[in-house]
Length: 497
Ligand SMILES: CC(=O)N[C@H]1[C@@H](OP(=O)(O)O)O[C@H](CO)[C@@H](O)[C@@H]1O
Image (cartoon, helix red, strand yellow):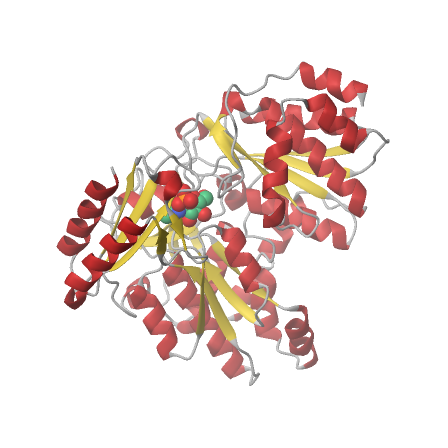
C-alpha cells in the first residue's frame, strides 16, 4: 500500500473536481493523469475480486484533440454498472487518498487489466499512468497501445471466454463478415462503392486491415493531427455540412474519433444524415427479412432515447416493433436491450449495436438459422462499434437490395433543432427517468406545457435536459416546421438563461 501511495504522489493531480459524466471521465487531458492512476487501481481491484480480466480505455471520442477521457471496462466487455459511478467518482476525487487506499489495498492483490488508447498526443502519457498503477499494486497490465474503444471492449469480453487474445483476433472477427457479404447474391440497387471518413481517429487503422471481398471502400481523413477537425460522425450529425476531403455525390460513412459511432449520408454541401434511427430501421428490416427467410420466430425490440426522430418510431411501430425509450447514454440503452430477445439499440448520434439473448442464440443454433446467426455474430455484443455496424449496414443494404437513396426515402424525418445553453438553473432541472418530461422546477414544467398546448397543431415535442458531458442544458425541439422548432428552442433558451 505504501508503494502505491508513493507512486501516486509522483503523478500530477487535477486542480478541479472530476465528475463521472455520461461517458465516464472526460476533460482537458492535463487534468487526467492522477485520475488514470486511480481508475487503473479500481480496474485491477475488480479483476482481483472476480478473477477475470477487466479493462481501461483512454479516449475522448469525438471531443477536441486537447481533451481526453477514461472509460473503465467490466469483465463482460460492457461499461461498468451504473450503480458504481458515484463510488468511482469518489475514489478518483478523494482528498485523503492514503485513507481510501488503506480501506481497499491493504492486502496484496493480483489481476489482469487490458489497457489501450486512441491516437491523441496526450494518450501515451495517460496510458503510462494506468500501467504504473496496475503494476505497482501487483497486477499485470496488458498494453494494447492504440486501438478503437469497441476493439478493447471486445477483447476483454472474448478473452474472458477463452484465453487472452491478441489485437488481431478482433480483425479476424470483423473479416468474417466477408463470408456473409459475398455469399449474398449481387443485387440490382445495392451500391458497393463507399467513402469512409475516419475523422483522423484510430478507426482508420482497423479499416486498413479489413478485407471484405466485393466491398470497395476508400478511407479519407486519416491524419491524427487533424482529429475530429471538420470531419467525423459528430460533425456530420450536428453541423450537417460535408466533412472535409469527402468527394461530393457519393455514398459515404463517417466514424468518430474512437470508432464507436457511425453515420451515413450522400455527400453534398448540406447533408441529410442517416444516423442512429436510420441504422436501427435498416437493421430491423434486415433482421425481419432473415427471420422470414429462415422461417424462424423472433421478436425484435428497439431501444433508443427521446432524441430519436418520431418519424422513425412511427415507421417501426407500424411494422409491429416494440420500442423502449430510456435516458441518454448508451449504458442505459445497453441495460434495457439486454432484457429483450433480439434488440437493436442506437442513440440518434449513431452509437449502438444489436444484441441477442443467450437463449435466443441457442434456439437459432438448434434451428440451423445460419444466416441469422452469421448476421448476429457480427454485431459487437459488448458496445457500439462503428466498424462492425458499418459491415452490418452494408450487409443489410445488400440483403434488402437498397441503394442509399431507397434507405433514405423509407420515411421522412420531422424537422428538429438542438441547442446547448449555459443556464444558472442547470442543477435545478430534473427530468423523468427516461428524460421525456421535465419534472422540476415547476415554472419550467408549466412553460413547456404552455408552449406545447399553444402549438398543439404543430405537434411540438420538447426534450430539455442538463447535458452529462458539457456545462450546458440541451434543448431539443421537434415540430412540423423548422421555423417552429427554432422559435420554440429560442423561447425556452430565453426562459432558462
Ligand atoms: C444529444 C447528444 O448527442 N448527447 C450525447 C452527449 O451526452 P450529453 O449528456 O447530452 O452531453 O454525449 C454522450 C457521450 O458521448 C452521448 O451518449 C449522448 O448521446
